[in-house]
Length: 453
Length: 167
Image (cartoon, rainbow over all chains, first blue to last red; front, top):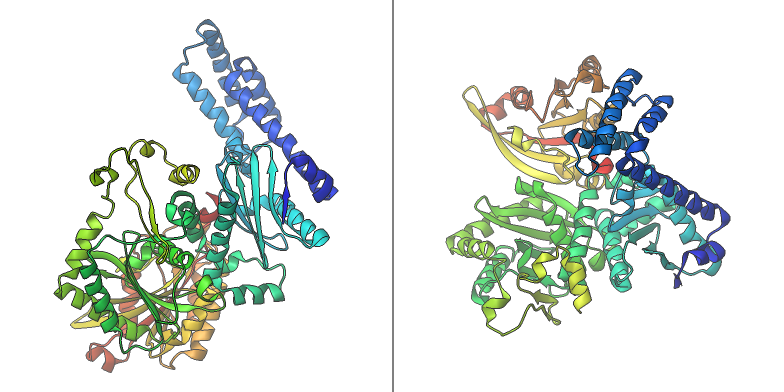
Protein backbone atom coordinates (compact mmCIF):
# COMPACT_ATOMS: atom_id res chain seq x y z
CA UNK A 1 0.00 0.00 0.00
CA UNK A 2 1.18 3.46 -0.76
CA UNK A 3 0.35 6.62 1.04
CA UNK A 4 1.62 9.63 -0.73
CA UNK A 5 1.73 12.46 1.69
CA UNK A 6 2.13 15.64 -0.19
CA UNK A 7 1.68 17.19 -3.54
CA UNK A 8 5.34 17.70 -4.34
CA UNK A 9 5.98 14.03 -3.85
CA UNK A 10 3.35 13.22 -6.39
CA UNK A 11 4.96 15.23 -9.06
CA UNK A 12 8.38 13.86 -8.27
CA UNK A 13 7.69 10.20 -7.69
CA UNK A 14 4.36 9.11 -8.90
CA UNK A 15 2.90 11.00 -11.72
CA UNK A 16 4.43 11.23 -15.17
CA UNK A 17 5.02 14.67 -16.61
CA UNK A 18 1.70 14.74 -18.45
CA UNK A 19 -0.44 14.55 -15.35
CA UNK A 20 1.80 16.99 -13.47
CA UNK A 21 1.22 19.60 -16.07
CA UNK A 22 -2.50 19.04 -16.09
CA UNK A 23 -2.57 19.46 -12.33
CA UNK A 24 -0.69 22.71 -12.73
CA UNK A 25 -2.85 24.01 -15.50
CA UNK A 26 -5.91 23.16 -13.48
CA UNK A 27 -4.57 25.15 -10.58
CA UNK A 28 -4.01 28.12 -12.84
CA UNK A 29 -7.51 28.03 -14.17
CA UNK A 30 -8.88 27.67 -10.68
CA UNK A 31 -7.04 30.75 -9.57
CA UNK A 32 -8.23 32.80 -12.47
CA UNK A 33 -11.83 31.79 -11.97
CA UNK A 34 -11.81 32.78 -8.32
CA UNK A 35 -10.28 36.10 -9.28
CA UNK A 36 -13.11 36.67 -11.69
CA UNK A 37 -15.65 35.91 -9.01
CA UNK A 38 -14.14 38.30 -6.51
CA UNK A 39 -14.08 41.06 -9.13
CA UNK A 40 -17.75 40.89 -9.81
CA UNK A 41 -18.85 40.78 -6.24
CA UNK A 42 -16.61 43.37 -4.66
CA UNK A 43 -15.01 45.96 -6.92
CA UNK A 44 -17.76 48.07 -8.34
CA UNK A 45 -15.39 50.43 -10.19
CA UNK A 46 -14.59 47.66 -12.59
CA UNK A 47 -18.15 46.94 -13.59
CA UNK A 48 -18.52 49.00 -16.75
CA UNK A 49 -15.16 47.83 -18.04
CA UNK A 50 -16.10 44.28 -17.46
CA UNK A 51 -19.26 44.65 -19.42
CA UNK A 52 -17.31 46.19 -22.27
CA UNK A 53 -15.02 43.23 -22.16
CA UNK A 54 -17.95 40.90 -22.43
CA UNK A 55 -19.18 42.83 -25.43
CA UNK A 56 -15.92 42.26 -27.18
CA UNK A 57 -16.37 38.55 -26.82
CA UNK A 58 -18.28 36.94 -29.62
CA UNK A 59 -20.30 34.89 -27.24
CA UNK A 60 -23.73 33.97 -28.60
CA UNK A 61 -25.21 33.83 -25.12
CA UNK A 62 -24.22 37.32 -23.99
CA UNK A 63 -26.86 40.00 -24.25
CA UNK A 64 -27.10 42.24 -27.35
CA UNK A 65 -24.67 45.15 -27.16
CA UNK A 66 -27.12 48.06 -27.00
CA UNK A 67 -28.78 46.55 -23.99
CA UNK A 68 -25.45 46.16 -22.32
CA UNK A 69 -24.62 49.77 -23.00
CA UNK A 70 -27.88 50.83 -21.45
CA UNK A 71 -27.20 48.62 -18.51
CA UNK A 72 -23.70 49.86 -18.02
CA UNK A 73 -25.04 53.44 -18.19
CA UNK A 74 -27.45 52.56 -15.44
CA UNK A 75 -24.68 50.95 -13.55
CA UNK A 76 -22.49 54.01 -13.85
CA UNK A 77 -25.24 56.01 -12.23
CA UNK A 78 -25.61 53.32 -9.67
CA UNK A 79 -21.92 53.30 -9.05
CA UNK A 80 -21.98 57.04 -8.38
CA UNK A 81 -24.81 56.53 -5.96
CA UNK A 82 -22.91 53.76 -4.29
CA UNK A 83 -19.89 55.95 -3.96
CA UNK A 84 -21.99 58.20 -1.82
CA UNK A 85 -23.56 55.44 0.20
CA UNK A 86 -21.26 52.52 -0.21
CA UNK A 87 -22.57 50.38 2.61
CA UNK A 88 -26.22 50.24 1.74
CA UNK A 89 -26.90 47.91 -1.15
CA UNK A 90 -29.83 49.01 -3.28
CA UNK A 91 -32.12 46.48 -4.90
CA UNK A 92 -30.70 47.46 -8.27
CA UNK A 93 -27.24 46.59 -7.15
CA UNK A 94 -28.39 43.18 -6.06
CA UNK A 95 -29.96 42.72 -9.43
CA UNK A 96 -26.76 43.63 -11.11
CA UNK A 97 -24.73 41.14 -9.12
CA UNK A 98 -27.25 38.44 -9.86
CA UNK A 99 -27.10 39.26 -13.55
CA UNK A 100 -23.37 39.16 -13.76
CA UNK A 101 -23.17 35.96 -11.72
CA UNK A 102 -25.67 34.22 -13.92
CA UNK A 103 -23.65 35.29 -16.91
CA UNK A 104 -20.60 33.64 -15.46
CA UNK A 105 -22.65 30.55 -14.80
CA UNK A 106 -23.86 30.40 -18.38
CA UNK A 107 -20.39 30.88 -19.75
CA UNK A 108 -18.96 28.18 -17.55
CA UNK A 109 -21.75 25.63 -17.80
CA UNK A 110 -19.42 23.18 -19.47
CA UNK A 111 -16.68 23.99 -17.03
CA UNK A 112 -18.75 23.65 -13.88
CA UNK A 113 -15.87 21.79 -12.30
CA UNK A 114 -13.83 24.96 -12.28
CA UNK A 115 -16.33 26.72 -10.07
CA UNK A 116 -15.52 27.24 -6.46
CA UNK A 117 -18.86 25.77 -5.50
CA UNK A 118 -18.03 22.47 -7.16
CA UNK A 119 -14.52 22.34 -5.81
CA UNK A 120 -15.62 23.05 -2.28
CA UNK A 121 -18.07 20.15 -2.03
CA UNK A 122 -17.56 18.26 1.19
CA UNK A 123 -16.96 14.95 -0.49
CA UNK A 124 -16.70 14.05 -4.14
CA UNK A 125 -17.17 10.52 -5.33
CA UNK A 126 -15.97 9.35 -8.72
CA UNK A 127 -16.14 5.97 -10.38
CA UNK A 128 -14.14 5.13 -13.49
CA UNK A 129 -13.17 2.05 -15.39
CA UNK A 130 -9.57 0.91 -15.18
CA UNK A 131 -9.05 2.30 -18.67
CA UNK A 132 -10.15 5.74 -17.49
CA UNK A 133 -13.70 5.82 -18.83
CA UNK A 134 -16.06 7.86 -16.66
CA UNK A 135 -18.77 5.86 -14.91
CA UNK A 136 -20.14 8.15 -12.21
CA UNK A 137 -19.61 11.48 -10.54
CA UNK A 138 -21.52 12.49 -7.44
CA UNK A 139 -21.71 16.13 -8.54
CA UNK A 140 -22.04 17.22 -12.15
CA UNK A 141 -22.09 15.34 -15.41
CA UNK A 142 -19.20 12.86 -15.49
CA UNK A 143 -18.80 13.34 -19.25
CA UNK A 144 -17.41 16.80 -18.71
CA UNK A 145 -14.79 15.51 -16.30
CA UNK A 146 -12.87 13.37 -18.79
CA UNK A 147 -9.61 15.19 -18.01
CA UNK A 148 -9.96 14.61 -14.29
CA UNK A 149 -10.78 10.95 -14.82
CA UNK A 150 -7.68 10.74 -17.00
CA UNK A 151 -5.51 12.07 -14.18
CA UNK A 152 -7.05 9.61 -11.70
CA UNK A 153 -6.48 6.72 -14.06
CA UNK A 154 -2.87 7.81 -14.61
CA UNK A 155 -2.20 7.91 -10.86
CA UNK A 156 -3.70 4.48 -10.28
CA UNK A 157 -2.00 2.75 -13.19
CA UNK A 158 1.37 4.39 -12.53
CA UNK A 159 1.55 2.91 -9.04
CA UNK A 160 0.19 -0.40 -10.27
CA UNK A 161 2.69 -0.65 -13.12
CA UNK A 162 5.84 0.53 -11.39
CA UNK A 163 5.52 -1.01 -7.96
CA UNK A 164 2.88 -3.67 -8.48
CA UNK A 165 1.25 -1.94 -5.56
CA UNK A 166 -2.09 -0.31 -4.98
CA UNK A 167 -2.49 3.41 -4.45
CA UNK A 168 -4.64 4.08 -1.42
CA UNK A 169 -4.56 7.77 -0.68
CA UNK A 170 -2.97 11.10 -1.42
CA UNK A 171 -2.90 14.04 0.92
CA UNK A 172 -2.53 17.39 -0.78
CA UNK A 173 -3.08 20.59 1.12
CA UNK A 174 -6.62 20.54 2.45
CA UNK A 175 -7.65 17.66 0.26
CA UNK A 176 -7.60 13.97 0.93
CA UNK A 177 -7.90 11.64 -2.07
CA UNK A 178 -8.85 8.01 -1.42
CA UNK A 179 -8.59 5.35 -4.09
CA UNK A 180 -10.04 1.90 -4.37
CA UNK A 181 -8.82 0.20 -7.52
CA UNK A 182 -10.62 -3.12 -7.69
CA UNK A 183 -10.80 -5.33 -10.72
CA UNK A 184 -11.85 -3.25 -13.69
CA UNK A 185 -13.18 -0.39 -11.60
CA UNK A 186 -11.63 2.45 -9.66
CA UNK A 187 -13.61 4.28 -6.98
CA UNK A 188 -12.25 7.59 -5.79
CA UNK A 189 -13.31 10.03 -3.10
CA UNK A 190 -12.01 13.54 -2.52
CA UNK A 191 -12.70 15.11 0.87
CA UNK A 192 -12.10 18.53 2.20
CA UNK A 193 -11.06 17.40 5.66
CA UNK A 194 -8.28 15.04 6.36
CA UNK A 195 -9.42 14.13 9.81
CA UNK A 196 -11.68 11.66 8.10
CA UNK A 197 -10.85 8.14 9.16
CA UNK A 198 -8.98 6.38 6.40
CA UNK A 199 -10.43 2.96 7.16
CA UNK A 200 -13.93 4.37 6.94
CA UNK A 201 -13.14 6.13 3.67
CA UNK A 202 -11.91 2.86 2.17
CA UNK A 203 -14.99 1.11 3.52
CA UNK A 204 -17.21 3.72 1.92
CA UNK A 205 -15.53 3.15 -1.43
CA UNK A 206 -16.02 -0.59 -1.02
CA UNK A 207 -19.74 -0.02 -0.39
CA UNK A 208 -20.00 1.98 -3.60
CA UNK A 209 -18.11 -0.69 -5.52
CA UNK A 210 -20.42 -3.34 -4.09
CA UNK A 211 -23.47 -1.31 -5.10
CA UNK A 212 -22.33 -1.62 -8.71
CA UNK A 213 -21.68 -5.35 -8.27
CA UNK A 214 -25.15 -5.62 -6.77
CA UNK A 215 -26.63 -4.26 -10.00
CA UNK A 216 -24.44 -6.18 -12.45
CA UNK A 217 -22.76 -9.10 -10.64
CA UNK A 218 -19.00 -9.44 -10.64
CA UNK A 219 -19.03 -12.12 -13.30
CA UNK A 220 -20.94 -9.95 -15.76
CA UNK A 221 -18.71 -6.96 -15.03
CA UNK A 222 -15.56 -9.00 -15.56
CA UNK A 223 -16.90 -10.61 -18.72
CA UNK A 224 -17.78 -7.28 -20.28
CA UNK A 225 -14.42 -5.68 -19.58
CA UNK A 226 -12.53 -8.83 -20.58
CA UNK A 227 -14.13 -8.46 -23.99
CA UNK A 228 -14.13 -4.67 -24.34
CA UNK A 229 -11.66 -2.78 -22.20
CA UNK A 230 -13.21 0.50 -23.33
CA UNK A 231 -16.82 -0.38 -22.56
CA UNK A 232 -19.00 2.50 -21.37
CA UNK A 233 -20.45 0.98 -18.21
CA UNK A 234 -23.10 3.69 -17.89
CA UNK A 235 -25.07 1.83 -20.56
CA UNK A 236 -25.68 -0.94 -18.08
CA UNK A 237 -26.04 1.22 -15.01
CA UNK A 238 -28.55 3.72 -16.33
CA UNK A 239 -31.23 4.26 -13.74
CA UNK A 240 -29.16 2.98 -10.83
CA UNK A 241 -27.20 6.21 -10.24
CA UNK A 242 -29.89 7.03 -7.69
CA UNK A 243 -28.94 3.94 -5.70
CA UNK A 244 -25.34 5.14 -5.52
CA UNK A 245 -26.49 8.62 -4.43
CA UNK A 246 -28.57 7.32 -1.53
CA UNK A 247 -25.93 4.80 -0.50
CA UNK A 248 -23.26 7.52 -0.34
CA UNK A 249 -25.57 9.59 1.84
CA UNK A 250 -26.18 6.60 4.08
CA UNK A 251 -22.46 5.99 4.55
CA UNK A 252 -21.97 9.61 5.49
CA UNK A 253 -24.76 9.99 7.99
CA UNK A 254 -25.58 6.68 9.65
CA UNK A 255 -23.77 5.08 12.53
CA UNK A 256 -25.00 1.73 11.16
CA UNK A 257 -22.30 2.03 8.53
CA UNK A 258 -19.55 2.88 11.01
CA UNK A 259 -20.40 -0.07 13.25
CA UNK A 260 -21.25 -2.53 10.46
CA UNK A 261 -24.60 -3.33 11.97
CA UNK A 262 -28.26 -2.75 11.35
CA UNK A 263 -31.23 -1.55 13.36
CA UNK A 264 -34.41 -3.37 14.13
CA UNK A 265 -37.85 -1.95 14.52
CA UNK A 266 -38.71 -1.90 18.20
CA UNK A 267 -41.25 -4.66 18.84
CA UNK A 268 -41.90 -6.96 21.76
CA UNK A 269 -40.23 -10.30 21.17
CA UNK A 270 -43.51 -12.20 21.23
CA UNK A 271 -44.95 -10.01 18.47
CA UNK A 272 -41.79 -10.40 16.42
CA UNK A 273 -41.92 -14.16 16.90
CA UNK A 274 -45.50 -14.25 15.74
CA UNK A 275 -44.64 -12.24 12.63
CA UNK A 276 -41.67 -14.49 11.86
CA UNK A 277 -43.85 -17.54 12.34
CA UNK A 278 -46.40 -16.24 9.83
CA UNK A 279 -43.64 -15.60 7.32
CA UNK A 280 -42.01 -18.99 7.70
CA UNK A 281 -45.23 -20.99 7.67
CA UNK A 282 -46.42 -19.30 4.48
CA UNK A 283 -43.32 -20.31 2.58
CA UNK A 284 -42.58 -23.63 4.27
CA UNK A 285 -43.26 -25.55 1.08
CA UNK A 286 -41.43 -23.17 -1.25
CA UNK A 287 -38.08 -24.56 -2.35
CA UNK A 288 -35.01 -22.50 -3.15
CA UNK A 289 -36.11 -19.58 -1.05
CA UNK A 290 -32.95 -18.30 0.65
CA UNK A 291 -33.92 -15.17 2.57
CA UNK A 292 -37.06 -13.39 3.71
CA UNK A 293 -36.73 -9.88 5.05
CA UNK A 294 -39.46 -7.60 6.30
CA UNK A 295 -38.47 -3.94 6.48
CA UNK A 296 -40.27 -0.94 7.93
CA UNK A 297 -39.09 2.65 8.45
CA UNK A 298 -35.61 1.65 7.30
CA UNK A 299 -35.38 -0.97 10.02
CA UNK A 300 -35.55 -4.74 10.05
CA UNK A 301 -38.83 -6.14 11.35
CA UNK A 302 -38.07 -9.77 10.68
CA UNK A 303 -35.29 -11.64 8.96
CA UNK A 304 -35.41 -15.34 8.09
CA UNK A 305 -32.70 -17.28 6.36
CA UNK A 306 -31.80 -20.78 5.26
CA UNK A 307 -29.81 -22.53 7.95
CA UNK A 308 -26.68 -22.69 5.86
CA UNK A 309 -26.69 -19.09 4.73
CA UNK A 310 -26.63 -15.80 6.50
CA UNK A 311 -26.42 -12.21 5.33
CA UNK A 312 -23.59 -9.91 6.36
CA UNK A 313 -24.40 -6.35 7.43
CA UNK A 314 -23.07 -4.84 4.20
CA UNK A 315 -25.51 -6.90 2.12
CA UNK A 316 -28.34 -5.95 4.46
CA UNK A 317 -27.37 -2.30 4.03
CA UNK A 318 -27.55 -2.71 0.27
CA UNK A 319 -31.02 -4.22 0.56
CA UNK A 320 -32.16 -1.40 2.85
CA UNK A 321 -30.71 1.07 0.39
CA UNK A 322 -32.63 -0.51 -2.47
CA UNK A 323 -35.90 -0.20 -0.59
CA UNK A 324 -35.11 3.32 0.60
CA UNK A 325 -34.43 4.64 -2.88
CA UNK A 326 -37.15 2.88 -4.85
CA UNK A 327 -40.44 4.71 -4.70
CA UNK A 328 -41.74 2.52 -7.51
CA UNK A 329 -41.87 -0.49 -5.18
CA UNK A 330 -45.07 0.98 -3.81
CA UNK A 331 -46.88 0.20 -7.05
CA UNK A 332 -47.49 -3.45 -7.69
CA UNK A 333 -45.16 -6.32 -7.08
CA UNK A 334 -41.56 -6.08 -8.13
CA UNK A 335 -39.53 -8.97 -9.49
CA UNK A 336 -35.92 -7.99 -9.79
CA UNK A 337 -32.55 -9.67 -10.03
CA UNK A 338 -30.31 -8.57 -7.20
CA UNK A 339 -26.74 -9.55 -6.44
CA UNK A 340 -25.55 -9.53 -2.83
CA UNK A 341 -21.78 -9.24 -3.16
CA UNK A 342 -20.81 -10.66 0.22
CA UNK A 343 -23.22 -13.54 -0.14
CA UNK A 344 -22.30 -14.39 -3.73
CA UNK A 345 -20.79 -11.82 -6.04
CA UNK A 346 -21.01 -14.05 -9.08
CA UNK A 347 -24.76 -14.44 -9.43
CA UNK A 348 -28.19 -12.97 -8.93
CA UNK A 349 -30.80 -13.74 -6.38
CA UNK A 350 -34.29 -13.07 -7.68
CA UNK A 351 -36.24 -10.85 -5.36
CA UNK A 352 -39.94 -10.53 -4.93
CA UNK A 353 -40.45 -7.08 -3.42
CA UNK A 354 -43.77 -5.62 -2.33
CA UNK A 355 -45.36 -3.56 0.38
CA UNK A 356 -47.57 -5.62 2.67
CA UNK A 357 -50.73 -3.61 2.07
CA UNK A 358 -51.96 -0.15 1.16
CA UNK A 359 -52.47 0.51 4.85
CA UNK A 360 -49.17 -0.93 6.04
CA UNK A 361 -45.87 0.53 4.87
CA UNK A 362 -43.73 -2.50 5.62
CA UNK A 363 -41.82 -3.88 2.68
CA UNK A 364 -41.44 -7.62 2.21
CA UNK A 365 -38.54 -9.11 0.28
CA UNK A 366 -38.29 -12.75 -0.62
CA UNK A 367 -35.04 -13.79 -2.23
CA UNK A 368 -34.66 -16.96 -4.22
CA UNK A 369 -32.23 -18.55 -6.65
CA UNK A 370 -35.07 -19.72 -8.91
CA UNK A 371 -36.03 -17.10 -11.48
CA UNK A 372 -39.34 -18.83 -12.24
CA UNK A 373 -40.70 -18.53 -8.73
CA UNK A 374 -42.51 -15.21 -9.13
CA UNK A 375 -46.07 -16.48 -9.12
CA UNK A 376 -45.44 -18.88 -6.24
CA UNK A 377 -44.02 -16.04 -4.16
CA UNK A 378 -46.80 -13.72 -5.24
CA UNK A 379 -49.32 -16.18 -3.80
CA UNK A 380 -47.26 -16.61 -0.64
CA UNK A 381 -47.27 -12.86 -0.18
CA UNK A 382 -51.09 -12.75 -0.37
CA UNK A 383 -51.25 -15.42 2.31
CA UNK A 384 -48.77 -13.58 4.51
CA UNK A 385 -50.66 -10.28 4.35
CA UNK A 386 -53.93 -12.02 5.06
CA UNK A 387 -52.60 -13.95 8.05
CA UNK A 388 -50.89 -10.87 9.49
CA UNK A 389 -54.08 -8.91 9.13
CA UNK A 390 -56.19 -11.58 10.76
CA UNK A 391 -53.81 -11.87 13.71
CA UNK A 392 -53.89 -8.06 14.08
CA UNK A 393 -50.15 -8.04 13.45
CA UNK A 394 -50.46 -5.40 10.72
CA UNK A 395 -51.77 -3.07 13.41
CA UNK A 396 -48.86 -3.95 15.67
CA UNK A 397 -46.43 -3.16 12.86
CA UNK A 398 -48.20 0.12 12.13
CA UNK A 399 -48.02 1.16 15.77
CA UNK A 400 -44.31 0.33 15.89
CA UNK A 401 -43.72 2.20 12.63
CA UNK A 402 -45.36 5.35 13.91
CA UNK A 403 -43.16 5.39 17.01
CA UNK A 404 -40.00 4.06 15.38
CA UNK A 405 -37.98 7.19 16.04
CA UNK A 406 -39.22 7.98 19.51
CA UNK A 407 -36.59 6.39 21.74
CA UNK A 408 -34.96 9.20 23.71
CA UNK A 409 -31.92 9.09 25.96
CA UNK A 410 -33.66 11.28 28.52
CA UNK A 411 -36.45 8.70 28.88
CA UNK A 412 -33.93 6.31 30.43
CA UNK A 413 -33.48 8.55 33.49
CA UNK A 414 -29.73 8.10 33.65
CA UNK A 415 -28.19 11.31 34.93
CA UNK A 416 -25.86 13.10 32.52
CA UNK A 417 -26.11 10.41 29.88
CA UNK A 418 -26.18 12.32 26.60
CA UNK A 419 -26.35 9.57 24.03
CA UNK A 420 -25.44 5.95 23.54
CA UNK A 421 -25.04 3.39 20.82
CA UNK A 422 -25.28 -0.26 21.72
CA UNK A 423 -24.17 -2.92 19.31
CA UNK A 424 -24.76 -6.60 19.85
CA UNK A 425 -21.69 -8.16 18.31
CA UNK A 426 -23.24 -11.59 17.91
CA UNK A 427 -26.11 -10.41 15.76
CA UNK A 428 -24.60 -7.20 14.35
CA UNK A 429 -27.65 -5.33 15.55
CA UNK A 430 -27.53 -1.93 17.08
CA UNK A 431 -29.81 0.27 19.06
CA UNK A 432 -29.38 3.96 19.44
CA UNK A 433 -31.80 6.65 20.58
CA UNK A 434 -32.69 9.75 18.64
CA UNK A 435 -30.13 12.52 18.78
CA UNK A 436 -30.94 15.19 21.30
CA UNK A 437 -29.30 18.50 22.15
CA UNK A 438 -26.43 19.28 21.89
CA UNK A 439 -26.08 16.87 18.94
CA UNK A 440 -29.08 17.98 16.95
CA UNK A 441 -27.50 21.26 15.99
CA UNK A 442 -24.92 19.42 13.91
CA UNK A 443 -26.50 17.99 10.82
CA UNK A 444 -23.59 15.68 10.09
CA UNK A 445 -24.04 12.91 12.63
CA UNK A 446 -21.60 10.68 10.84
CA UNK A 447 -18.60 12.83 11.51
CA UNK A 448 -19.81 13.67 15.01
CA UNK A 449 -19.97 10.04 15.98
CA UNK A 450 -16.63 9.27 14.37
CA UNK A 451 -14.93 11.97 16.36
CA UNK A 452 -16.46 10.97 19.63
CA UNK A 453 -15.38 7.37 19.38
CA UNK B 1 -54.81 4.05 -15.75
CA UNK B 2 -52.06 6.60 -16.05
CA UNK B 3 -50.70 5.74 -12.65
CA UNK B 4 -49.42 2.40 -13.86
CA UNK B 5 -47.31 4.06 -16.50
CA UNK B 6 -44.16 4.83 -14.65
CA UNK B 7 -41.26 7.02 -15.57
CA UNK B 8 -37.71 5.80 -15.37
CA UNK B 9 -38.56 2.28 -14.47
CA UNK B 10 -35.43 0.35 -13.67
CA UNK B 11 -37.00 -2.75 -12.22
CA UNK B 12 -39.79 -5.01 -13.36
CA UNK B 13 -43.17 -4.84 -11.76
CA UNK B 14 -46.24 -7.01 -11.96
CA UNK B 15 -49.43 -5.00 -11.89
CA UNK B 16 -53.06 -5.87 -12.42
CA UNK B 17 -55.52 -3.44 -13.89
CA UNK B 18 -59.08 -3.73 -15.14
CA UNK B 19 -60.46 -2.02 -18.22
CA UNK B 20 -64.10 -1.85 -19.23
CA UNK B 21 -64.89 -2.46 -22.87
CA UNK B 22 -68.58 -2.15 -23.64
CA UNK B 23 -70.17 -4.68 -21.29
CA UNK B 24 -67.05 -6.67 -20.70
CA UNK B 25 -64.56 -6.16 -17.94
CA UNK B 26 -61.05 -7.17 -18.87
CA UNK B 27 -58.45 -7.82 -16.27
CA UNK B 28 -54.97 -7.04 -17.49
CA UNK B 29 -52.07 -8.72 -15.78
CA UNK B 30 -49.17 -6.54 -16.69
CA UNK B 31 -45.43 -6.96 -16.59
CA UNK B 32 -43.94 -3.50 -16.68
CA UNK B 33 -40.22 -3.67 -17.23
CA UNK B 34 -37.29 -1.62 -18.42
CA UNK B 35 -35.17 -2.72 -21.33
CA UNK B 36 -32.04 -3.20 -19.28
CA UNK B 37 -29.77 -6.10 -19.99
CA UNK B 38 -30.20 -7.80 -16.63
CA UNK B 39 -33.93 -8.20 -17.17
CA UNK B 40 -33.28 -10.07 -20.38
CA UNK B 41 -32.84 -13.33 -18.51
CA UNK B 42 -36.35 -12.87 -17.15
CA UNK B 43 -37.83 -12.33 -20.61
CA UNK B 44 -39.08 -15.91 -21.13
CA UNK B 45 -41.23 -15.45 -18.04
CA UNK B 46 -42.78 -12.31 -19.52
CA UNK B 47 -43.49 -13.99 -22.84
CA UNK B 48 -45.02 -17.13 -21.45
CA UNK B 49 -48.79 -17.05 -22.08
CA UNK B 50 -48.56 -13.38 -23.01
CA UNK B 51 -51.44 -12.18 -25.15
CA UNK B 52 -50.36 -8.64 -25.74
CA UNK B 53 -47.27 -6.50 -25.57
CA UNK B 54 -46.70 -2.77 -25.69
CA UNK B 55 -43.29 -1.60 -26.75
CA UNK B 56 -42.59 1.98 -25.82
CA UNK B 57 -40.02 4.29 -27.34
CA UNK B 58 -39.22 7.94 -26.79
CA UNK B 59 -40.11 10.17 -29.74
CA UNK B 60 -37.33 12.57 -28.78
CA UNK B 61 -34.68 9.89 -29.06
CA UNK B 62 -34.00 8.04 -32.32
CA UNK B 63 -31.90 5.43 -30.53
CA UNK B 64 -34.87 4.20 -28.50
CA UNK B 65 -36.87 3.77 -31.72
CA UNK B 66 -34.10 1.51 -33.01
CA UNK B 67 -34.14 -0.49 -29.80
CA UNK B 68 -37.93 -0.75 -29.95
CA UNK B 69 -37.61 -2.29 -33.42
CA UNK B 70 -35.24 -4.94 -32.13
CA UNK B 71 -37.70 -5.74 -29.35
CA UNK B 72 -40.44 -6.15 -31.94
CA UNK B 73 -38.24 -8.65 -33.78
CA UNK B 74 -37.47 -10.50 -30.58
CA UNK B 75 -41.14 -10.69 -29.63
CA UNK B 76 -42.11 -11.96 -33.07
CA UNK B 77 -39.48 -14.67 -32.69
CA UNK B 78 -39.99 -15.64 -29.05
CA UNK B 79 -43.52 -14.80 -27.96
CA UNK B 80 -46.67 -16.88 -28.60
CA UNK B 81 -47.72 -16.62 -32.27
CA UNK B 82 -51.03 -14.80 -31.70
CA UNK B 83 -49.65 -12.06 -29.50
CA UNK B 84 -51.00 -8.57 -30.09
CA UNK B 85 -48.14 -6.11 -30.30
CA UNK B 86 -48.61 -2.38 -29.89
CA UNK B 87 -46.00 0.25 -30.51
CA UNK B 88 -46.20 3.46 -28.47
CA UNK B 89 -44.25 6.62 -29.20
CA UNK B 90 -44.09 8.23 -25.80
CA UNK B 91 -43.42 11.82 -24.67
CA UNK B 92 -45.84 13.19 -27.25
CA UNK B 93 -46.53 16.12 -24.91
CA UNK B 94 -43.10 17.61 -25.58
CA UNK B 95 -42.78 20.49 -28.09
CA UNK B 96 -42.28 19.50 -31.73
CA UNK B 97 -38.80 20.99 -31.70
CA UNK B 98 -37.66 18.13 -29.47
CA UNK B 99 -39.11 15.44 -31.73
CA UNK B 100 -36.66 13.10 -33.48
CA UNK B 101 -38.96 10.33 -34.64
CA UNK B 102 -41.78 11.52 -36.93
CA UNK B 103 -45.30 10.23 -36.41
CA UNK B 104 -45.30 8.89 -39.97
CA UNK B 105 -42.10 6.96 -39.33
CA UNK B 106 -43.57 5.13 -36.37
CA UNK B 107 -46.86 4.58 -38.14
CA UNK B 108 -45.22 3.18 -41.28
CA UNK B 109 -43.09 0.76 -39.31
CA UNK B 110 -46.11 -0.39 -37.32
CA UNK B 111 -48.12 -0.96 -40.48
CA UNK B 112 -45.33 -2.97 -42.11
CA UNK B 113 -45.15 -5.24 -39.11
CA UNK B 114 -48.83 -5.46 -38.26
CA UNK B 115 -48.62 -3.59 -34.98
CA UNK B 116 -51.04 -1.25 -33.27
CA UNK B 117 -49.61 2.24 -33.18
CA UNK B 118 -50.23 5.30 -31.04
CA UNK B 119 -48.32 8.24 -29.77
CA UNK B 120 -48.76 8.62 -26.05
CA UNK B 121 -47.82 10.80 -23.16
CA UNK B 122 -47.21 9.21 -19.79
CA UNK B 123 -47.13 12.68 -18.34
CA UNK B 124 -50.55 13.84 -19.50
CA UNK B 125 -52.03 10.32 -19.80
CA UNK B 126 -52.78 11.02 -23.47
CA UNK B 127 -53.77 7.81 -25.29
CA UNK B 128 -52.75 5.62 -22.37
CA UNK B 129 -56.21 4.29 -21.71
CA UNK B 130 -56.94 4.24 -25.43
CA UNK B 131 -54.07 1.95 -26.28
CA UNK B 132 -55.28 -0.58 -23.72
CA UNK B 133 -58.79 -0.40 -25.11
CA UNK B 134 -57.46 -0.94 -28.63
CA UNK B 135 -55.52 -3.97 -27.44
CA UNK B 136 -58.59 -5.31 -25.69
CA UNK B 137 -60.55 -5.06 -28.94
CA UNK B 138 -57.93 -7.07 -30.77
CA UNK B 139 -57.72 -9.86 -28.25
CA UNK B 140 -59.34 -13.15 -29.33
CA UNK B 141 -63.13 -12.84 -28.91
CA UNK B 142 -63.47 -15.94 -26.83
CA UNK B 143 -61.00 -14.63 -24.30
CA UNK B 144 -62.80 -11.32 -24.09
CA UNK B 145 -66.11 -13.07 -23.47
CA UNK B 146 -64.53 -15.07 -20.71
CA UNK B 147 -63.43 -11.85 -19.20
CA UNK B 148 -59.83 -12.92 -19.33
CA UNK B 149 -57.10 -10.50 -20.02
CA UNK B 150 -53.73 -10.58 -21.56
CA UNK B 151 -50.41 -10.18 -19.98
CA UNK B 152 -48.50 -7.21 -21.16
CA UNK B 153 -44.86 -6.61 -21.55
CA UNK B 154 -43.85 -3.01 -21.62
CA UNK B 155 -40.42 -2.16 -22.78
CA UNK B 156 -39.83 1.38 -21.74
CA UNK B 157 -37.13 2.14 -24.22
CA UNK B 158 -36.75 5.65 -22.95
CA UNK B 159 -33.32 7.07 -22.74
CA UNK B 160 -32.06 7.86 -19.26
CA UNK B 161 -33.05 11.43 -18.55
CA UNK B 162 -30.17 13.80 -18.90
CA UNK B 163 -31.15 15.39 -15.62
CA UNK B 164 -29.78 12.33 -13.87
CA UNK B 165 -26.24 13.20 -14.71
CA UNK B 166 -26.26 16.92 -15.42
CA UNK B 167 -27.90 18.36 -12.35
